[in-house]
Image (cartoon, rainbow, N blue to C red; front, side):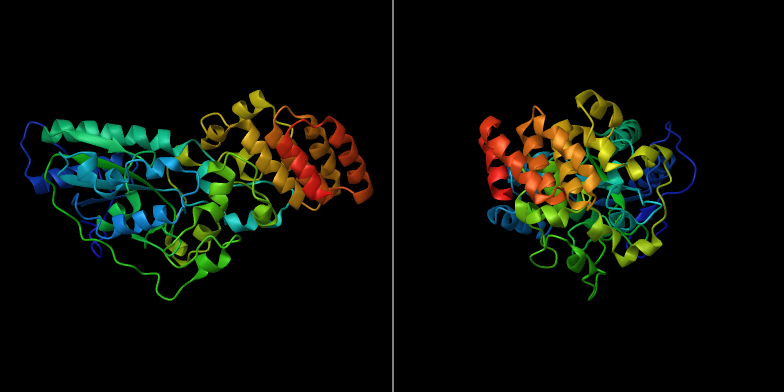
Length: 395
C-alpha cells in the first residue's frame, strides 16, 4: 500500500472488485482502498476499536475542567466517545477516511483586510457533512455487499473521537493545536469513519512529528491553549463565533478582529501545510462570494438573504442573528468610521443579540459625543437588560 511510512493508505487507482468472488480480509481491504479512491477520499486507514489508548482519559480531563463550555452534548454519555465498543458492541474494525480541503490561498492574508470578513476555509464551500456523508454511505453500501457484514457510518456530529482514531489508523497525529496533522496534507483533512463488523487488517498508528514547534500555540489570538495538546474551547474563536449562543465576551472582541465564522490561525501556521495541496474535489471548493465578503454588505442581511447566501453552507446552522453578531464585532474592529452607519441601523434590529453587538461596534467606530447622545436615547427606549448593559459598559 502507498504511504508505507505510517501504514496509512493514500487513495489512487481504479475500482477493482469481482463481487462474485469471496475475498480474503487482505483482498477485501485492498479493494476497499480502491473503491474509496473513486469516491474522492484522499487517505484511508484501519484500526482496532480498542485503539484509543489514553484519549479517553484526556477527554475526561477536558470535560472535568469545563473546557467544553456550552457544548453540553460532549458531556452526554461520554463513555460512548471514550470507547467505540460502547457506542456499538458489534464493531470489529474501524475504517478512518480523510478528504483534503487545503485552501488555495493562505487564510492569514485576509486578516489584513479589515473591512472584509474572514470565514474559516472549511466553511467557504458546501457543507462537508453533507458532501462527505454521501461518500461514506456509498462506500459503506459497497462494503456491506462485499463483506456481508453490518456497518455504521459516522462524521463529526456523532459520538466518535475521530482524531485519535485517525492517528491510530495512521492518517496523521494530533498536533499541539489538538487537530489532526498529516505529513501529506498538513492540517487540512476532513475526517469520516465507518465502523464494520468485518475483520480487516490494521494499519500502523502514526507518531507525533510536531517536535519543538509551537507555532500554533503562539499564534492563537485568545490564548486558547493552556498547554500543548490542550484546548480551552471557551477561549477559542471558533467556539465563540459558532457554538456560543450569547454575546461574545468583551475580553475577546478585539482579538476576534475580522473573523466572522471560525478561525484558521492555528491550522494555517502549521509548517506541515507545505506538503498540502488544494482540495481536489470541486464540491469542496470555496465559493467566490465567501472568500472575502464585505462586512458592510453582510451587516445588511435579513433572515431570507442570510439563508439564500449560505444555502448548503455550514454557516447556515448558526442562524442569521448569531452571524450578524459576529459581523458587528468585526465591524467594530475594522477601523473604518464609514461603517458606523451599518451598525447604527442595527440598533433597531428585532434581535437583542444583534442590538447588543451593534452597541459595541458603534462604541469603537463613532465619535464619543455622538455615541453618548445615542446612549441617552437608548436608556429610555431599550427594554432588553442585556442590551442596556452593553450601553452602560460602553459609555
